[in-house]
Length: 71
Image 1 (cartoon, rainbow, N blue to C red):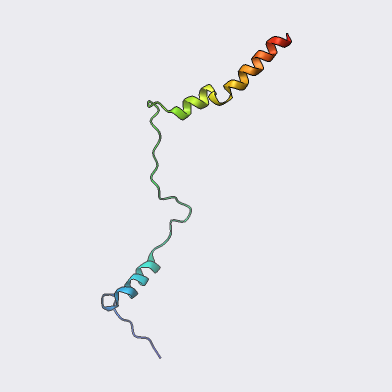
Image 2: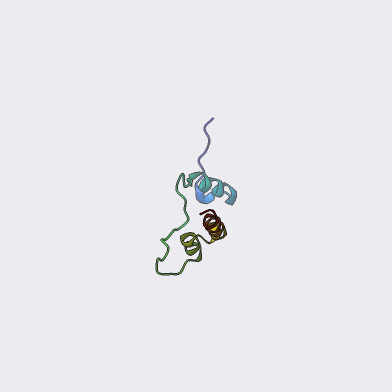
């Protein structure tokens, strides 16, 4: 038996929602988040720490102190 085709405008809200959800496609490999390049003129604390190596400063001092005592 052949199914009747009911126009979308006459279908229930739930059926219309299912129809539109089936038509939508995913983003695939594209990330929809908007990105922008960082402003190079602004001060960046993270960049300054990486540039001057604040995390390994103590180790550098100890290495320098021990190298002076050995020589």
